[in-house]
Image 1 (cartoon, rainbow, N blue to C red):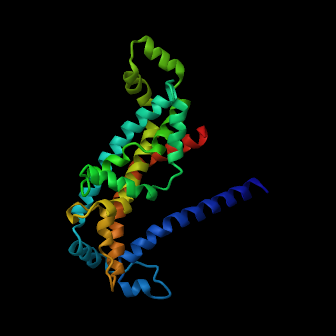
Image 2: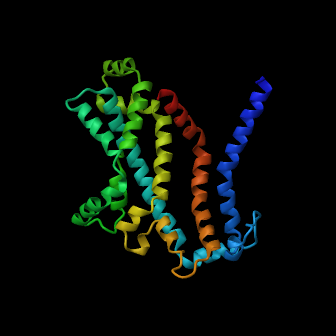
Image 3: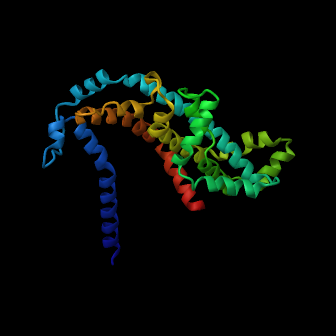
Length: 274
């Protein structure tokens, strides 16, 4: 196969991949501008309709969209900031310090990644109920502050990126353990933390099941739980549902567009180090 043929094959594959990635978002936008009858029609209409404003108005009239968005932003931001702090601190400690039980603790941490999160809902809910946190934002924030994946990710990155010689130089300058973390390791960990921050924020933003379980006051509902209220029992306005979904997706697209370089850099670094 010639060099030209290889390039054509490569670019064709890339174009197919881009199409498969972008088309769901395009289809979501098309459905959000259509009525339910147009969405359910066959063959489907692949072009934009004229119902977007009506669908968006119906969303705002049916649910308190902005309050739910504010709740979600609050929970996602606090959880993301806490995750970055605790996971980076724990990952740095596992990577650069020796202490009794280190291997056992890290293996136990990895073992928790193999347990489906749904299995922990009942004991987690009982804990929240016992301390009076049911129907509070604390129940959404605190359990997610130190995830096993985040600690594992930072540890692996830190082992490869923070040289021991730099740590020794910091100790010679009189740095304690926390100053080593803050002044030596943290600047180097920024790409990994950017990836972890976006990954965590998106996960919290899209979380539906746990907020549904632990919240019962509609004024505290997160966006995904509130959007579920758009589905009627006997009749569903699919255009309105798609418009609500589109509105909920826009902030994530904007977030990825702003931090895409750090996100892609973090994935690439992880792939190279792995």
